[in-house]
Image 1 (cartoon, rainbow, N blue to C red):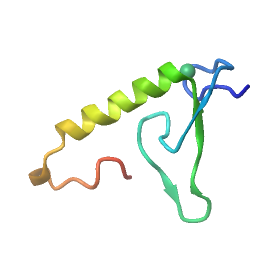
Image 2 (cartoon, rainbow, N blue to C red):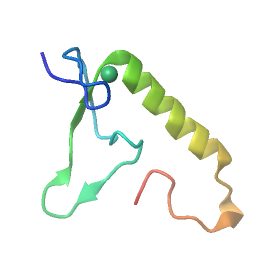
Image 3 (spheres, protein in one colour):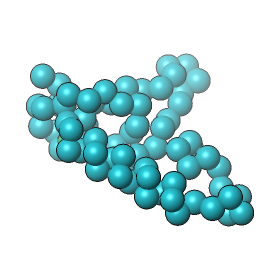
Length: 68
Ligand SMILES: [Zn+2]
């Protein structure tokens, strides 16, 4: 069993390209890093992403909220 990238428990069943701080990071050499999470940490992560998306407004002139 894989270790969850957030809580460090050996119960990670979700593969995600979201990093533990809830961003998608793309590396030109290696592409997207795959992280492993347990179900509850992954849900928390998705909640953070949605929260940020819902707070981002077009006229803030921000980059895409899931990109760095
Ligand atoms: Zn976890």
